[in-house]
Amino acid sequence: MALDPTEQHLRHVEKDVLIPKIMREKARERCSEQVEDFTKCCKDSGILMVVKCRKENSALKECLTAYYNDPTFYEECKMEYLKEREEFRKTGIPTKKRLQKLPTSM
Image (cartoon, rainbow, N blue to C red; front, top):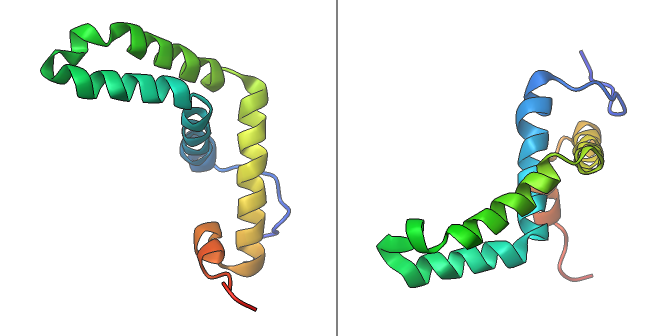
């Protein structure tokens, strides 16, 4: 049974696992300043990071949660996933491997 590359239906694993994974990755990129602040605080504080980095942790959680709860952001990540899935169904090559195998010289 061949899958239609342009089909838009999502399985549960796609909705509940794969799209949220893309959301986490993109949200971490967009909240890079807060991630950097929290990471620096944790490195500088050592074992006391739980107590000393509350402000940075709260700022990071707030930034990430804002993206996780944004329906527009979800749709953006869903469309990105559907595009990747469509390409995979056409070529049979996952996006990461397809990007790695691009020729470096002409």
